[in-house]
Length: 364
Image (cartoon, rainbow, N blue to C red):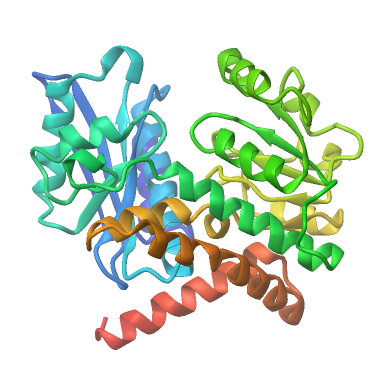
């Protein structure tokens, strides 16, 4: 057996992290496209999830990421109350160097070949303008520009949803949803993080930021002369004394065996996907008395927006749906307390119940 047989294929067919319905490997030699489309579950409806463009170290790593992200989208869409299953795509390469119109068009043709089983949108490394190109070959594309019939940047409502998750966490932990006077650390102030800063400053929170891109930090500091400070890196951020909330808003795996023991925050609530590096981290957080707002619940504002675009986008309708993330998060904390389990496990149970009921209704 090859390494991929022992790793990715075992994950796909045998592990608890698998159970995917379909995985498509895509290659277009002319444009240089190498992509993976993973469809995890369609019990609730067509799979919906973004396209990540990232310079993976290996093809195996790309497939594993697609599988993990697609599974997460099934749970996210279920908890968001959407009639969509979970899917995700990854394009292997450096988006700054390898992204071309020809490559995006080729990718669009592969998505179109699935006949609507997978609906794509933006993710890390892809933007609204890219979806406009993909849509020229594939009608199952959302996250497009308003000029092309789309809803535009979904990071606006993603940040709004995370903010609602923070308010719910404050309500549960401190008995008051207000974040005024609280100190919030944000790791990653790019697409979503910079909008989150605005919500927090409007609320009267103190914000500490960091980002691997210095220009992103400079942009925030230039706009906010007070109430926002910066630290060198995430290692410094998680150790800031007096931190109330930690918001991972970059790539996944932020909560792990190295970071959880030194985390000073009382709450973790951020926009990044797959924040728990491995099973068991949610218990480590609970054992330390740190309240974890499940990532796929609080960061669902963006997928709520792109799903709405498929039916004729209305921003106020979407914002009202995203505001319900506050109630959903509180319900998860209540279920966790009732069942004596961490919030991440409670969210999984609720999502799995909805998918199971939908599959049963459809005779699957």
